[in-house]
Image (tube, rainbow, N blue to C red; front, side):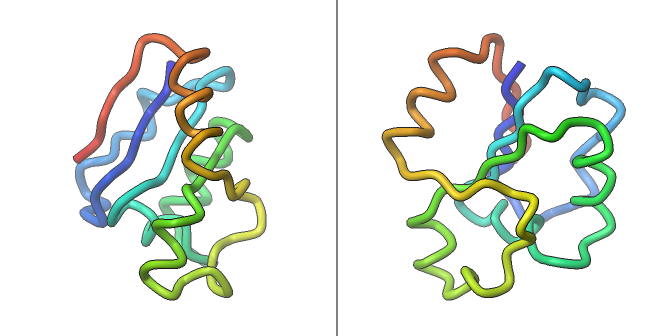
Length: 93
């Protein structure tokens, strides 16, 4: 399953629904959750090591230096490929 997180509202993300084989994609305002020292990100990474973030979204917000290094930065083409290989999808917004 692919979990796409597009909101900075951390209270709506239920990490109990994320499993080890799942992938998590942070995009739009969801990139804020991928900042260093975020307890919610730590919980997500304990569930799955497959965490990704879209480069354009972090660049647009000037956050690249602050993104946790455990999250892999990908471009939009790679994000499209990620959605193609992970089904079903759940959007946290």
